Amino acid sequence: MDTSLYVSTAIPGYISNNSNSNNYSTPFVVGDIIIEGNKRTKPYIIERELPFKTGDSIYLPELVKAFEISRQQLINTTLFNEVIISLKSFRGYVVDISIQVKERWYIFPIPYLKPVDRNLNEWAKQGYGVDRVNYGFKFTYNNFTGRNDKLKLWLITGYTQQIQFQYDQPYADKSLKHGYRLGFAYSFNREINYATIDNQQRFVDSLRDGIKQWSAHVDYTYRPGLRTVHTFSLSYTRQEVDPRINELNPKYYNYEHNKISFPELFYNISYVNVDYKPFPLTGWLAEGTISKRGFNKEMNMWQISGKASKSWPLTRKDFFMWQGVGTLRFPFSQPYINQRMFGYGDMYLRGLENYVIDGSAGFLTRQSYRHQLFKFSVPTYIKSRSHDHIPFRIYARLFGDAGYSYNKSFTMNSLTNRMLYTGGFGVDIVTFYDFILRLDYSFNQIGQKGLFLHIKSDF
Image (cartoon, rainbow, N blue to C red; front, side):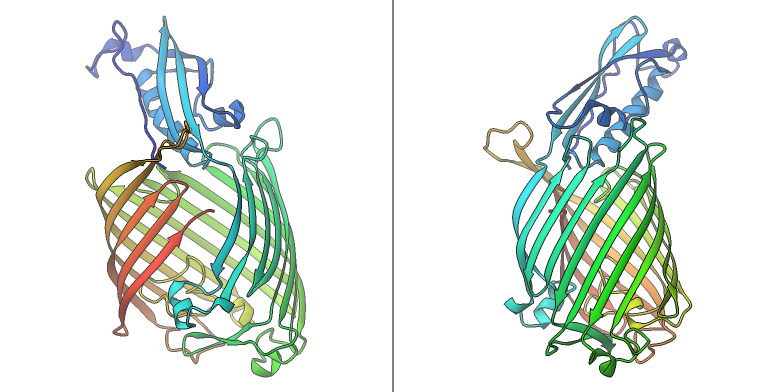
């Protein structure tokens, strides 16, 4: 996360600090690109992220800009802790370039322990019960063959019994533009979220058969340039619940059976142009998705969704960020299992974490002002070229959110079909391996306030 950039711009006889220097009118030729520090990562995977290659003619000011783009691209691969790019030497009008990287740890065979509830506040409402915790073994091997591919194997038990496998190979051909992803998952849970009442999830846990789900998917990815990725996916899901669920909520599946199977087609396009993807302070992120779930009366849903964020630096230590998310599902009359909107995953209003808000259409906008309080590193005192220190950045934050969820079928919840507003202040702590700790004190329009803790980590 803590990255640096060194660009040598004062070369006697070639460059001066005067922007009108005639030397800027003469293009240079990119010579050797010397890469150091990549014990695992293939050199061509690093070169894939560069906007230049050996033999290109480029003016030196543009090359300096290209260094910054290269640094951002390499950091956002999540392969490296640090990246340093510099002009190594001049040979006439041929420039050699140095790229020094510090690789991350890629293998994480770690025990897994996590509450199953939507967030820590929801777990607290359930009494911090140990029976609401998943535990097991989570094996993740990033950069499996040195081509930024990822292998995951999860064996989880406790509240939910789960087996999950996934392999992601983004660069499967010589052009490094085409890739694939495949995986399968199985889960079993005796407790079922069968309805939303008074803006709260309602569960039943005395069912013998519980809920079982099998799913598998295969994806094709296409990345023609640096910042845009296209994904086409085909998946198949089979779900089975205890027959008594239809008595508790006849609209759970919207038909009388307790089993459902459906394919899903999915297309996604994403664009990334930010300084640091997990916690951007400058740049754009955008994503659009269209999917078709099921092809008969038992399951028939189109979904169109999009999200974007824009981050601006205001001063050296002050930043503003806007985020927007929108989802449209049709037909509007969907079964309960297709109605999740706010309160799940990252789709929530800060200050309404205690509630879920279902719907078939909705939008969310977030605004955040951040001020950097501290930036420092702590020595690790271990012999490691890539982990000799742990960086920290700490920000104070003011925020305000607004959102709306339209629900045609389930109108008994007071937070649906109305504008929602929240606000507050907090602290963000950012450190290596994309670990982000957020502490918020939030207010909402129904007169409630409280302290909320959020943890984001890719472990």
